[in-house]
Length: 290
Length: 280
Image (cartoon, rainbow over the protein chains, first blue to last red):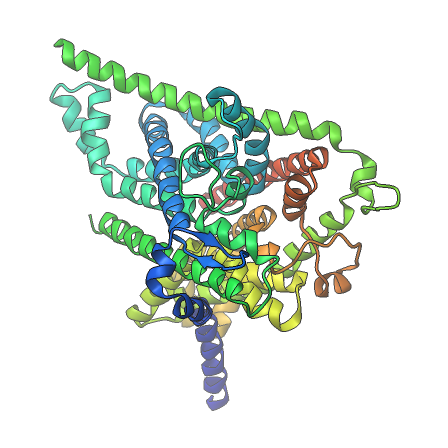
């Protein structure tokens, strides 16, 4: 009996350790990023690092200002949200409320495919279709620009927005809609004036999730944005926080200020993501409580 | 009905239909474009050889094998960890704060972008035992842990409490109940978790660039895991961005597209199969 008890306790202990692995991973990632991100910030100076307008890591007199990356990431994400959210939102309302079962199944399968396509494939298509198209239409010397990145990101966040919004809209109690219909509102009015407000926390969560995905995307953006450390402008080649890390990591030498500065950029990106996660959790929790 | 209301309704209906059509058209275009440009470039030679500078031939067999190795290695490690964590949460944990903390950690992990995983994986694994598929796989383990945990947890919740009580009533110990009653009940969650993870691993590139590298050497699984190698997605990136070999890039893109379709299809079928079995 005693032996059995011991055995059960050991098993319990093993499962406890397995359960705590996720917590351990988060701690490990946080600690590693902070430890490797702080030295360069110290050397460059927090203000010069965050608000320096020039990044020239390989120049004779290197400059490490990441304001262009921060602003590009913010503008790029905002642009993607501006385009992606309305399209995703209306599609979600249509699929959740209007579409018949067959149409919904087919388009949902299509949306799932969109979610599963690897980001490099988006990058490839963007490189060969979008970039030349922007060059032709807007008559600019190079189509690899912030605009191209915004369009690619808008497409990439679409499935997240549609799926999370649909879940929220599906969960609206039928009674709300019935009451509105009985009072003489048409179905369309009911969907937008009753169902959507009732699902607003879930839809907000969808938007925040989209922000998180857009700000964290690296490869697709790297292939279409041109990768020059300019201040953001719609038709110019730009570099995001993610691509700033990815594009120089391969050739920076370990231990150099350049590489350490890249880790500091990753730390800034990580802080952005943590902020977004906290916001997301806030909306999800509010959704659950209701 | 007054005019303003009519306009509002018309506008909203129009917006819904236009946006849905746009989404559908986008998927059709992407699929068509990639498949039409990619499939003619897929040849037996491309699939069955390794790249050679002497004959200037490009083959993606090493990349295919690397992908298989890394998927295999990741799943072997992540499944026990993820399933174990899920079992702890649903069967053992009593402390609500601890459960909330673990779930919050899992959510945080699933929100971290892959480029950050790539950096941390480089610091943690590649710097210690070299850029290799194994370092890449370990990075992917952390990435996929929340997915496997979540799907297993969902399926464990559907195992009726009465089954557990019945087994306990017959005098079984906790571990025995888990082994004989709980674990068989979460098979569908584990399979779904596997499928989702495979999809994510196939599509991953940023996390692998600095952990698994981009070599195209032909290796067996044991040498493969300890040496650097590009997966299909990383190879696509290298061929398109660094070498301008768009034919090969499209061929890989088409293969990835077909694999994504298959993965989505199998996820749906598995979901339907288990839902049906549960209802019987």
